[in-house]
Amino acid sequence: MKFIYKTWWKVLAVVLVFYTLISGLLFQVPRLDILHETIRNLYFHVPMWMAMLTALVISVYYSILYLRTGKEEHDLAAVECVNTGMIFYGLGLITGMLWAKYTWGEYWSGDPKQNSAAIAFLLYCAYLVLRNSIDEEQTRAKISAIYNIFAFPIMIVLLFILPRMTDSLHPGGAGGNPGFNKYDLDSHMRMVLYPAFLGWSLLSLWIATIRYRIRLIEHKKNAIN
Amino acid sequence: MKLAGQTIELLKKEIILEWRSKYAFNGILLYIVSTVFVCYISFNLNPGFKQTPGYPIVWNILFWIIMLFASVNAIAKSFLQESKARLLYYYTIAHPQAIILSKTIYNTLLMSLLSMLALVVYLLFFPSKVDDILYYFITVLLGSMSFSTVFTMISAIASKAGNNGTLMAILSFPVVIPVILLLVKVSKAAMDGIDRSLSLNNIGILVAINVIVIASSLILFPFLWRD
Image (cartoon, rainbow over all chains, first blue to last red; front, side, top):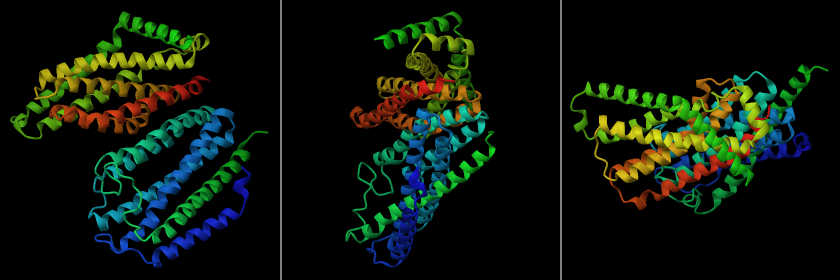
């Protein structure tokens, strides 16, 4: 846990996010039908999901750690990672819906990936409701850790496996790889996209650590010595 | 194979308990029959609906919705009906994985039987053209197995969290939606008599989801029952 108190990766996050903001809006992008300039949203929409995934993976890691050790801090870390993941989940949905409005014509077009994302959103809402339904702290920590681990593979199936099996408006429908080969023909876009993945993931990690540290202070304040 | 022996013993106990009271079986069967009957009466208020092209689609989806709610109700009590003292007794004599495994297998058997009967009753009230009836039956069996694996684990979680019906529904429905989607797709293909090999892909995913769910319940249940 020493890592979260270091400064260098926070600086890196800020630098990378600013780099993607500037270069994402100014660099040259391939001209494609329908997409036109909205292709720049790729730099903002996809990294949101990467940031979400980072937060949720870390949350599962801490849930597993909680079940093994039973330390309360691990539960706090897991729940704050889910909270942060949910913020980026919402941002990912919103950026996707805005993009969909300009390219597919509707905010919500019933695309398999959109529907799956909505279902997986319910999955994590259920996690938060489950936490509220239990008063006893240790039981709450244990049961929500179990549900978090249980929900994670289902989320992966929903977001990354099922949409590939059917025709989708997203790239990679019907058995393809949802890579970006179709778009970044000149591989210019990779120069922005991959730093964006890293930058936004680090940013989500940063938000999660701040929330975690606040919770930790509250937890210590409420503890009976 | 201590685990297998314990599982079989616990499974026998579940079946004997059910055989003596027949409460879950009769209760859920009545639940299904009355739901089907309500649907039957409601649809009869709109004469001519059976001739419309949308009828087979509604027929298929309605069946799965009925099965979904029936199985939630049937399986929700698999941990509810156990008293705290009896659970404590199990934990002293049996392995936790044997407990969850025996519950899952028992629920699968119960739901398979119930869904077969439900399908017969449903076909009685809502006659429909099912081209590949054998394949439809197989899909229904697969569906009741998938519902059982998911709902057994969720009911174990919900029973630890105050055991209310709302929690059971909100925890399990997001998990079960992908299963329902696949089942509706496969069963519609069976209705239309589409070549079986085309659905194998979806059946593969269904089986994979089941394997994931069973594996994670086997790993997680030992942590869940410890208080």
